Image (cartoon, rainbow, N blue to C red; front, side, top):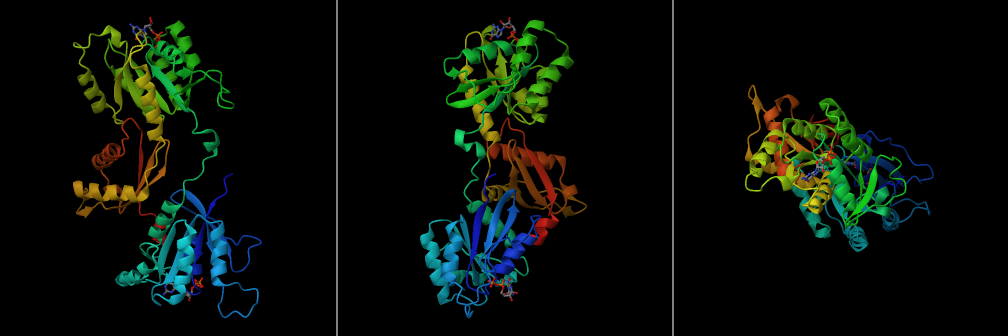
Length: 445
Ligand code: GDP
Ligand code: GDP
C-alpha cells in the first residue's frame, strides 16, 4: 500500500490548531484516533476529502510557558512536522491579529519549498472576513478565512489542501501507465478480424508479452508508439470470423463481453452499409460498459469518396449517441488510417483517465450558470453549489445542489454536454451525481 501523504498544521499555541484539526477530521468518516507512539503534542489523524486520503499532523498542545524541559520550541516543533509533510497549513488567529512571532514561522515556511496555505482562524462570522487581509504580509499567498468552531470555510480549506498535494504516486508508475485495453466490436463480417491482424502486422506495432497482464489467452498484447495495449477477446473475433454466425443477439452478447473487459471500444462498421441501427446499439452497449468509444467505418476502399456522405453519417452518430463519439474511416485492406485509429484509441484512454482540478471545475460551473438559467419547480429554482471530480476511468463528477428533484433531464444533459465540450470528453462516458448538499459537507463547510 502507498503511504499516505502528510499535511502539517503549524502555528502558535491557542490559534486553534487542534480545534481546526478536529473539525477537519471528525466530520469525516475516517477513524479519528491518536496514533500509538505519538507524543501528546503531535497527533496524526487520517482523513479523506473528495476521494483523496491524507494525514493531518496536529502540532498543537505545546504551551510556551511550559516549564517541562522536554517541551520543544514552536519552531522546532514546526520543523519536525514539516520534514515528512507535503503541504503545510499555517494557522493564525485572525481575532488576535498579526503578531511578531508569526513571522518566525512564516520564515521557516517560505524557505521550506513546498506548498503552504495560510488559514486565518476564528473568523466566526462572514462579516469578519476582511480580517484576513493583514496576513497577506506573511508572504505566503492569500489567507483563507476559517472558523474551527463554526465550521466556516473548512470545505474550501480542504479543497485547497487536496489541490496542493502532489499527485498520488500510482502503483503502476514504476513501469509506466497501465496497458490500454482495447476491444474491436461490431456485427459479423464488418472486418474486425482483418483490422485485428492489420494492427498486429503494422510495422509500428510490436507484439510483446508483459508480465502479469495477459494471463488470459484470449487477449493479445502489443505495443504502439511506446504505449502498451491489449486487444481483448481476440479469440472471440477470430472464432467468429470462421463461424460467421449472424444471430444478432449473439453479436451483442459478445460485444458486451468484450466491452466489459476493455477501456476503449472501437465499434467497427461496414462503410458499404453506413452506420446501421445495430451498430448504434452496439456503441450504446459499449458506453454502458464504461468504454470510451469511436466508430470505425471499415472497407472505405469499397466506397467512392465522393458518393459516400460521411458528414451525414457523422451527424447521425452525434444525434443518436449520447457520448458524441468520433466516426473514423479505415480500410484493413489498404491500411488506410490504421495508425490514426490507434492514436485515437490512446487519446480516448487518456481522456477517460483524466482528472480535472476542482478550482477549474468550479470556474466552469460558474460559467455555465451564467450561460443558462437553472430550472425551477413551483417557483423554487435549482442551485448548483459546487462541483468536484470524484473518480476517473470513466470520469465521475459530483455536483452539490440544493434540491435534487429540481434537476430536469434536459438540464442534466445540458451540463453533461458542456462538460464534454470543455474537457474534450467526446466519446467518453461520464457519470454526474447530483447530490443534495450532503450532510457531510454541511458539517464541514
Ligand atoms: P491550539 O493550541 O492552536 O491547538 O488551539 P486550540 O485548538 O486548543 O484552541 C485554542 C482556543 O481557541 C480554544 O479556547 C478554542 O476554543 C478557541 N478557538 C479555536 N478555534 C476557534 C474559532 O474558530 N473561533 C473562536 N472564536 N475560537 C476558537
Ligand atoms: P469480422 O467478421 O468482423 O471479423 O470480419 P472479417 O475480418 O472476417 O472480414 C469479413 C470480410 O470482409 C472478409 O472477406 C474480409 O476480407 C473483408 N474485409 C475486411 N476488411 C476489409 C476492407 O477494409 N476492405 C475490403 N474491401 N474488404 C475487407
